[in-house]
Each structure stands twice: as C-alpha cells, then as structure tokens.
Length: 345
Image 1 (spheres, rainbow, N blue to C red):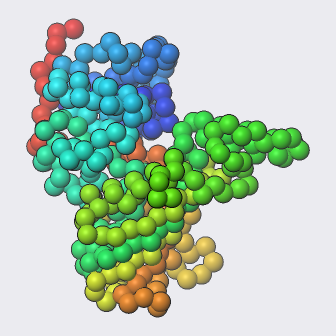
Image 2: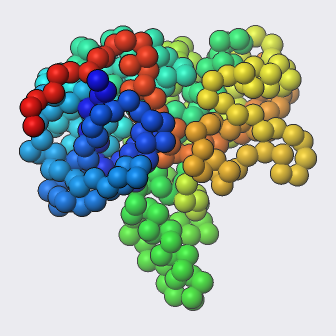
Image 3: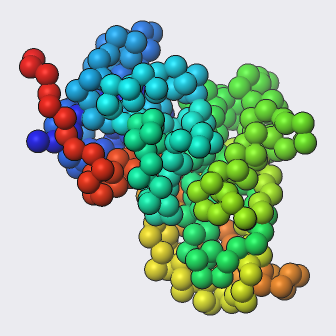
C-alpha cells in the first residue's frame, strides 16, 4: 500500500512545484490531495497527467493521511501544523514557523538526515530558508574535511522567493519601463526591474534583516553551532534561481583543487568550474534543476585557510519543494513512517 499525501497551499508557486516533483520522482503515493484556503475551493492544479480539484484546508480530516507538505505560510502553519501532527500525520513545513523550535528537526537530507529521528515529538519537520538550503549543501562536505570557522555570504535572490506577487511585479515593471511608462512599486520597497534591493524581510534591531538572521541561525542548527556566519541578502531582478557569493575560513589548510574534488563527489552538488568565458553556472541554468551548482572555486589569499566560491540553485526546488519531497522520501527510506489504514470511501 502506498502513502496518502496532502499538499497544503497547493495553488501557490511552491505548492504547484511540490505536486510537479512528486509526479516527476514517482513518489509512492496512492492518493494525493490538493488543499487550499476557502478562496481557492474547486480551483484546479496539475499532478502529473491528472487534474486535482482543491479541497478546503479548514474542513479536511487528516486522520488517515500520512504526510502533509505544508506551504501555506507561517501563520497558517502555526495554527494547523500542531493539529495535523496530533492526528498522526507528519507535517513537512516550508515556512519559518517551526525552524528554530528545539523539538522540530530542521533538515536538508544531504546534510543532516540523522536529525529526522526526532520528528515524532511534534510530528513536524521544518524546511530551511531557501538561501540556507543551497548554502549548507555546499558547505557540508567542506566542513567535514576542513572544519569551518567563519562564513561570509552575499546572496542574489530571485523575485520568486517573494511569491507570485514578486514575479508579477518584476514582469509588470519591466513591461512598463520598456513602454516608457512608470514602474509602480507594490510588493517590494523599491523598484526591482533593472535594480537590486539590499533588503529582504524586516529589519531587526542590530541592523540585519530577518532573512540574514535566518541564514545565520539555521546554518548553525543544521550544520554546526560553532560556525560563525554573516550574511547580506539582496533581491535581484531574476525570476527563478538564487545565487550566493560565499567566502569561507577553515580550521585546516585548503586548496581549490582539493575543494573542487570533494564537491564533485558530494550529494546534491554539481561543479561547473572552468576558468574561461561561460565556465560557471548562473541562475538561468539552475532553473528547473535539482542540483546546487558550484563555480568560481578559488583560494582566498587574504586569510589563512580561506576559500571563495559561487553557488546557484533553483529556489523553488531545492530551496523549497524538492527539499520537502526529499525529506518525505528519506522518512520512508529510513523506515520512520509506514502507510496508515485508510477510511472506507
């Protein structure tokens, strides 16, 4: 018997991507249910070659559902994830609501799959922030070999990280500018078309934004609490794909050649790194792909045991939907969940 999987937030960018990835990877589900708010009742979403009609989350009984992939936002997750978990259904949540809860594993399967063993305390597992997910996939194999002391990362994050409204705003502003009209600002704090904005999420008292704070604390929880990390997160006029310029200081001596060799054999990583025109990955190449791409690997002579590299990934996939599906696959592979008995139709 296969699993019964519900997608909460099925009409959003990430929810649709979750459905697509479940179908692509032939996830062992006998039944997939699309859930949304009452505003989207009977809306239709694609699942492989099938069309699913959305049901209302508020009215749904999870007592015979095995897995809920939650992508309905933090407030919805805070209200619903504990209730769903209490019915025996495992929630894999894409929001920031549960990431720093000590009773909730924060998981990237290539990095810390062993943390899944603690999921049953609340039946909730958290997906990390999209910019954190690709970063730790790249850092993990290097940390295992050389020991990371400090990371300095600058992100170049696509507008899809702000949802459909962010993508619509870039599209609308670009068309307006080309037609010599005004670029109306609604979603972002400043014009995003042909511009970059060094501001993602709210500002905190210390001057960092919450997006930057997430990268700091999530990397520590996932990888190693001793790692020091500072981040500058920037929104750029790219539709899909986050990029990161990463500088790392290690405990042990490191060479670019050895780092390149280690990364080439790391799970979830694709190295594209030749010192010639076009010998690197960009967010355009990462769109629709599962891998985290690493390029521009080079030694940093300004610090002992330093390394710099460029990292790109599809934020809707590895940064969100794919990671959630991989968590579900890992739960099954490790024998941590089994299909539950179904209610009679």
